Image (tube, rainbow, N blue to C red):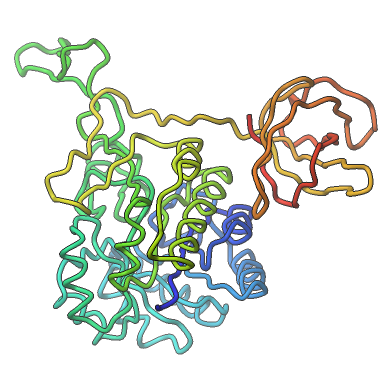
Amino acid sequence: MNKIELLAPAGNFEKLQAALIYGADAVYIGGKNFSLRAYGDNFTEKEILQAVEFTHSLGKKIYVTVNIFAHNDDIEKISDWLKFLDSSGVDAILISDLGILSLAKSLTKNLEFHISTQANVTNYRAANFFHDFGASRIVLARELTFDEIKKIKSETSAELEIFVHGAMCISYSGRCYLSHYLTGRDGNKGECTHSCRWKYSLVEEKRAGEFFSVTEDDRGAYIMNSKDLCLLPHIDKIIDCGITSLKIEGRMKSVNYVAGVVKTYRAAIDSYLKNPAEFKIFDEWISELDKVAHRPYTTGFFISDNQSTQIYDTSKPKRTSEFLGIVRKFDAKKNIALIEQRGKFEVNQLVEFFQPHGKTFQQKISKMFDAETGEEIFSAPHAQQLIKIPVEKPVEIWTLMRS
């Protein structure tokens, strides 16, 4: 059976580290420009070089998104960016625009080209076109059923990648002009304001100022707000049909999201590959995916193109746990963990330790100490304060503490 790549988002260096440490085979990142997540932290040139070094030190891969739809004034700047990426050691770049693909072919020697989902590849002839033009991998459009994906795989020798988890876009393959129309910020150039998540009401032309709810309640209606994708229950089918890479969405999501989703999909993939005949979905996997911030889950178009993918009453994500901190050091002799605080917690609070490889466990915080002064404290209200906590079991570096 072919090796299956688990590909994770990395909005900054810390999230990149978390993704790889928690089990991703590869990460995708964006630079400060030319990426469809312009409002994420993203990476400077220096940070990309650091990211490449860290990723390759683990024997894993790193891809950079260059997936905007370029205008004429972008081309010269993109040329310099492509030359830098070619020399940086990154393994591949993701491209939507044919002009950028053509330019990358002429300017680079060391990069593989992956075609972004924004390119809207929905059939095998389109996949073969890009493959013949030099792309090694196609990230398929999200609007495909499983049967359509299988058909494309049977008719192309290109590597195929599909999204298996994360936020979905109201617009076809993410090609949306709503944000640009309402705010002047172009989603196709990475500046999306997520206008589809806003609250809308109906206004009649001759009744200015009178707002009518689209639904019967008084909260308005999020008529374009989509559910989140979750294909975990179908991992066996996806692997069997020959997909090369399983992609998680979320470069603007938290470290807690990245770690939780990556470890869950890692466990599911490894479980299936170990014993395909007896593969099953464990309740603890579903529970873990509920703990991270998410909207109600859907299989999107995977089962049928008639599935309900919209939420009409709220755009707010939910989660069943709160991210409190990260274990930065562990003193095995004293069973003391050094926690970098990310949320408020206090003595006698029940917390959970979610580890990169070890089992998750819970305990009450018995005591807390300020790591700098050694003073005993009873709460941790300050962002990124370093705190020492006695733990009942050994914990790995990069363990997340959650409520």
